[in-house]
Image (tube, rainbow, N blue to C red):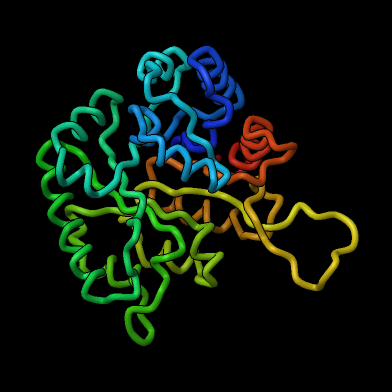
Amino acid sequence: MAVKAVQQIMLGSVTKNEKQAQETLKEVKKVGYDGIELNGFMIRPTPFIVRMMTKMAGMPVGKGGSFDWESMIHQAGLSVVSVHEDLGMIRNQPDQVIEEAKKFGTDKVVITGMYRFDYSDKKAVLNLAHDLNEAGENLKKSGIQLLYHNHNCEFRKVETGKTAYDLIIEETNPDYVGFELDSYWPTEAGVSAIQLMKQLGNRMRLYHINDRGTRLKGPSMTPILKSDSMELGYGNMNLKELVEQALRVDVDAIILESHKNWVDKSPIKSLQISAEFLHREMH
């Protein structure tokens, strides 16, 4: 059965010190999640510019790089389903990445997309697929799976009828590269998330879940509303169908990652509400 997990990025504003972090992790476990997905930039000392960029995006990471996450996660009774890293770190410091994953008891390392990268450049995307294969082959020698996590930039067209994501799927070796599909971002880009899931099949080893809608009540100023992240079951996505497909291919974990639009501006209350949906649908 897939593990119910939470992405660490949701917890940045409620892990400001080690005591609060410990309490937050215990609350995550209490409401029914069994796992957490970590970010390398949140469990190691992080450059100031990285903290500023995430804060400006509405998702502060705090200063948890000095916390004893291994001990806190163990005390909370959570498992680590994977660690997010960037491709440069994986290629340049593979031993550190492997050691860190094993320290936390996970066999999965996830690449969270590319920064300052042109996903409309077919040659660049082909080179990326080559680099993913090479990195995945290297990690596999130590028993670590490499997964690729999408946002919306992968759905830019590289040629008529084909997106960068299509090309990444086609050009990566299933023996070395798997996927962590985030269904929010293709939906935001106008792409069918369920079709992507079916296209990936059992190459999708982890599933990032979120809902998309609006919290606005009453009349709107214009006929057009801007959608945002929502608690599971409170937006317009067909999450029931998506969860069923994820379970059909036996994903190892379904991971909640909502963004800054939390109910009452509280990530804890938000993940509590979303847990109700997961408990109901992941039976």
